[in-house]
Length: 257
Image 1 (cartoon, rainbow, N blue to C red):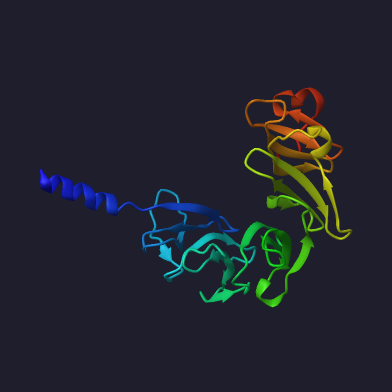
Image 2: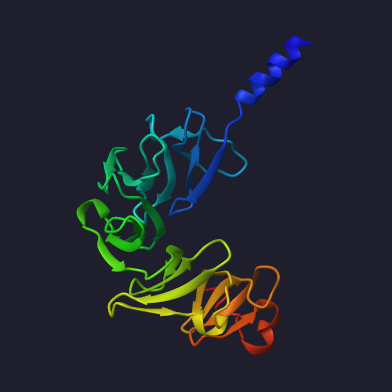
């Protein structure tokens, strides 16, 4: 009886957690995290049909390494904090497998928002520890300095996407149940709240998913619904649920673009 309990406890200790998988630009590899070394570290593995390949450990440290992402040139960005303090810094794994620390304010928290072909966009509380501003840094990021592109009046800037590296669509979170969508014109330094008019001072959850065409964004929202569902948000502040979309729009092209 005691032997069965001992084996069960050993099995429990052997449980590993894997997550955060991201594709290589050529979709031939994935990068991910796994806590088999004792805390989360960055791994990569190749993807081959009907074949199991071995994973390669890329980071080896006592501190947590997480949120790895490929850049357009095939190098890897990831986050690391010290002793679990959550003041994450951004690191780069270059083509030689060397770690390059990109951010160096060890008292500030840096979180990657999105990566385009030419830029990395991230949020950080560098200037004010109670506020997260949005920064972008040109790729190759070890050769370029960051620039602040947005300072929110309230809320936390979250994930989004770029349209053409001049326009940036992203979410502002005011809590789990209240989130808005902003469109930032980077060159003009102008930010437009796309959901303020339609929400009419009510709290809804809005999440940007994909840019469809010059005037429409695919979103997820609980606007006029008890559940979060897909919809089409226009830049002039109108939202149509996806199940009604064929009546008002021909999206045969945008949904494939």
